[in-house]
Length: 68
Figure (tube, rainbow, N blue to C red):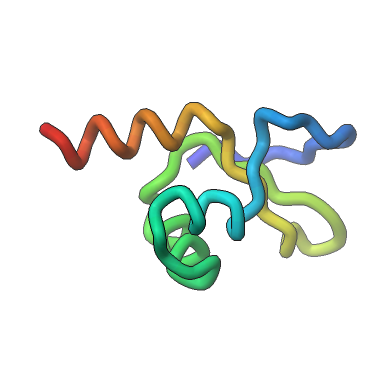
């Protein structure tokens, strides 16, 4: 899982809530998936890296894995 600090908000980076809405699961489930390494393109923001952003490309990437 790639983690880095992102200085400027970018619309390509989604919140856990936005990703959760896409997959019709809770933001907490998305956090579990992040912790389990289900997403490769993740950044952590703020003190302690508690704020998480997931790149939009992960939506298609994960959908492709579940369709295979």
